[in-house]
Length: 324
Image (cartoon, rainbow, N blue to C red):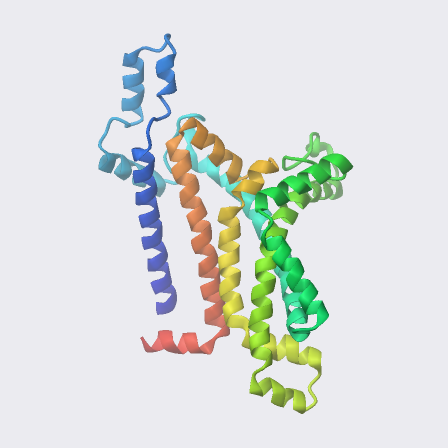
């Protein structure tokens, strides 16, 4: 319990620091949402002043931050100037779509990385391992944006996949099976882009962790006792290499959640990415702050999941936390 309490306190302090810095940098950035209204001769300076007072933009920064924190505690996360509504409901809908996309991509990437990385480590130095290392090195130098654009061009030319959105027109009239098929088709390209962009790094880490463990004396002794190779790899070696891989899983989950914004914008996925881009261009400051804070929560949440898995898998962590 102390272990999780300590991790929770660290996460809360991190979120507080990120919120302060984001709020400060947003306030220091030149211009605001109402600057463009000054160009409209039909809007008087008195109207602009009343709008700034209404949304408390004329208050000192600490007071504005205090009001924003109170709105966070109410679940509102501030007020969107562009949408004329609290930020919270806007973000929750988009965050759900981002979570669905990135969790699927993370599970797919790990489902491929674990068996392929273990196979590569088992054939270390031989031609299959060298071929796989060359392929991962090639994918590592391909930017995520280029990969997403390539998949988008492929979809346009083949017409096999939709090129944007979450569902098709007339989705409500489809049968349950066709609804599921429609959602899967819309998810296919962005999931593939995210999974392929993270797969080379995961493969290299799995290969390195397994290659280090496969040379351990206890595995050689187990192999000498006639234990099958597959059992050695997936039951003993993978368990011995689990700690760094669990940490990597949590980091990859959080990083993919907070780093999927470019893919969402390119492929018109209705997640946090397009909403944040529109808010930045419109200088809708509280939407930007809420989006950054939510991305940080995703990253912290991924690391927290990794901490829980490590606590469950490694008895040394439980012993150390109980002794403190």
